Length: 129
Image (cartoon, rainbow, N blue to C red; front, side, top):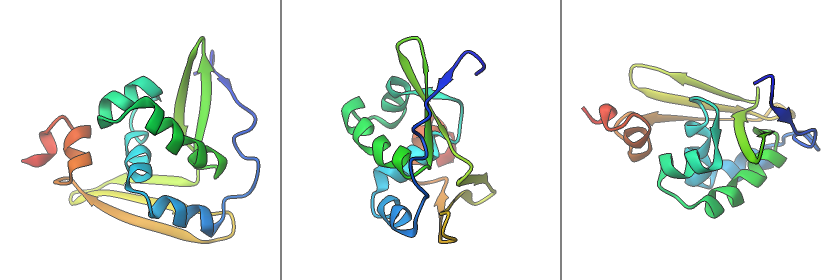
């Protein structure tokens, strides 16, 4: 990642409880965070992985970036995305635990079972069995 140019506008303000509620109310944003728990991905790779359009994902990535939950970098013409330190993802025996922490101390957690659709997509169907 040393040849990446990380944008300086990633944290224009502190992450708040309101930001976390906005993520919690939208399953697509949760899916994006789960997808970014793996390798560094560009928008096309995210769209292919999640089976959603690039424009839809771009619309959801903007509030995630503004909230300081996702960072963006550029390599050539591509934008790549990575989770910030405010997002913790833990792969457990029962599923994936996703925890978000705001700068004001608020937090939100989910446990996403491996049998969920997004986990089947991310594991190439391996999670279904």
